[in-house]
Length: 165
Image (cartoon, rainbow, N blue to C red; front, side, top):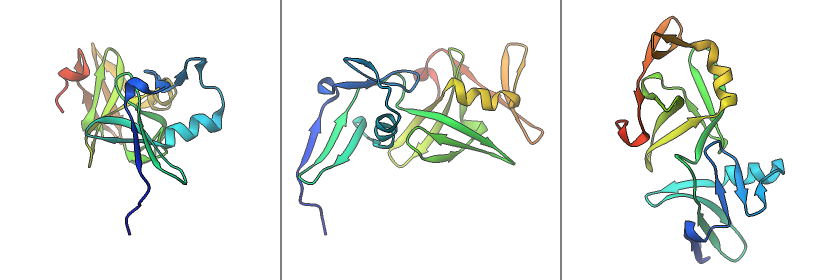
């Protein structure tokens, strides 16, 4: 059975909110402060070939609101390190830490995420980097991740568009 509710699509130019480069939501009044609203917005993030959007179902329609963001709309909010690593994203999704897919851009750590929607980028927040800090080493002017005695060099790029996808 297919959903008969109409789809309402709002382009990012008409969105009344945005996501900054640190994973914080903003509207014309400033940074969102209510934790439940923030969590709701993060959990509603989806993506397709047109970009990131918030998905919401109401009784009358389904809504897709594309929104402005810097770099990416996906952020690592928590890191668990056991034998391997697990990342909890702002959306609530859990994905493996993949050392071979890490990259640095302007001293910020990212990981490529191969997803059915395409090649996406996840940005580590400062808080998530603190949890990973004991596994990061700087050798000369290069960084590497150390997990289970394995050393994984982290390539550095001038911009995300320079990094291989």
